[in-house]
Structure formats: C-alpha cells, structure tokens
Length: 355
Image: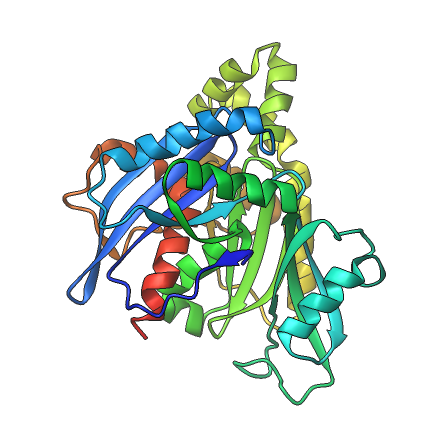
C-alpha cells in the first residue's frame, strides 16, 4: 500500500472508501461481539478530474457529505483508488527482502518492468506456488505482483481526504483489496477450493486466482463496463447515459450486442484460465465476480457462457449483519457488488485483529 499509518491499536470498527469510475463508495463496519455489522454505506458521485487542484474541493465535499450522516468515532478511513495510470504486473526477481525489492524496482523500473515508474508509488506482494501454502523462502527466485500508481494521483486523493477532514489510514489499489475481502468473508472456500475472483470494473477487469488462501496469479485486462457501454452507444446511436440505461434493462436486442462487445473479455478470461490450469496443474472450481458489472445476472451469464465457465456474483456482505443499516435496503442490494473494494479495505483491518 502506498500510505499506511503504523497503528497498533485493536480495531473495533473501520471505514473503507473506494474511489473510481466517477463515484466514491463508502462502508462503515463495526465489530459486534463475535460478528461484524454494516453500520452504514453510501455511494456518491465524484465529478472531479484526478490530479487537478481545481477539482479537489468538490471531491472533498462529497467525501465530507458521506461522513456527515455516520456516527463514526473518528473521521479516518482506508482508501482504495484506481486511476488511468495504474500499472499492475508480475515480475521475477532474485530472492531478497520485500523492502529491498521495492527499492530495486523503484530505481530500475525500466530494466525490470520495461516501463518508467520513477514518478510512481510502488507496492508489491509475493505470489505463492501450489507446492506450499507459504512462499518458498529457500527458493533463489521470487514471483512478485507489482502495483503502481502515479505519485501525483495518489497525493491528490490524500489531499481530498485531508480537505474533507478525514485522516487517511492507508491508500491502496483495489486489485488486492477485493482479494482481502474474499479471504475475510469466505475463508473455508478459499482454503479448500481453487477460486477465481473477477473484479469487473469500469475500465479494467482483474482476474485473481487463489488456492490454499493464497494468491497464485493475477491478470489485469484493460477492458470494463465503459468499453461495453461505448459500443452500445455507437451501435444504438445513443448518448452514453441512455446506453447505460439500456445496459441495465438488458432487452434481447441489447443482449445480442453485449455478447459481441464482451467477446474480447471472454476470450482473455478463457486464455487466463487455461494458462493457470497449465502452470499450476489444477482447475478452477468456483468463479466469483464483483464490481459494477457483477450486479447484472444476465451479463455474468453471457460472460460465463462465452468463456465456458459458470460465474456467480459474490455477495461481499453475506457474513455481515445488515439488518439495521443506515440506508435503503433495496439500494444496498443493488449496489452490493460495487461495494466489494470498500468492504475489503475495511474487513482486512478488522480481520488483522480477529486471527
């Protein structure tokens, strides 16, 4: 993660904020005895240009408004971001401490990653193998998942939070945040099955493969709901807002167009599954999806059919008490797939003290 405060205090509550695709999504989760309760949630528009100082006050106002109706003990949050300049990739390095690996990538990004990330914040995590539940510490090589975001963008989001009088506890990418959320809500499944978690975002789709509660492989495709909506708008001769409405209705003519538009993603998904199967000699047994597109059962059906694998919507709130949530129950059901990154950011911190 790009920013994290060293706070050793046991957490009884956490707020997760997810910035992306023109919206900010927030959840307030509190520990209640042995369980967890969703105290509040909200999804607000974020009409701002990341990195531009002129957009900062409007974005801060939306964040402040989100907190206004919540009875949080303190105004602090774990933030998740996704920017157009985000880079997620894998690299193999000689075995060394992660801090040294991060420094090496920061100084020699062109050599190791074939791109200049000198003005980026870089974070990384070691990927595991199917031979053991933990990284092979005695191996001479290490496989790393690298996440990077432009320094200017990360600082802009930090300044938005500060302007809203919210203390940023951490700022990180959603790629691993959704994985943390799945590990927290589905521990038995992640331990015993080979799980594919799809994060179907606005501009990217992330494919995460897990086994023995460890992340084995991640692939990011720069294709999401925005590309599908733009193709619909072009084919139907509509403005983007009208195309979004048609995508939500999913009439039979629109389904046919979605099947064509989603074909590149389906091919990439099938290719990634086949690659994983060959590399790890194991087959995916469950495929779960989160993100905006996961709210449409028909889209998941089409994508699963084209990719040759059944895909289920992941309910990131299924282990939480939502009976007295501050918010509309019908709205919560509608936005649950879109809350996965915010939920993952909060649950990961509460889980740190639950183990």
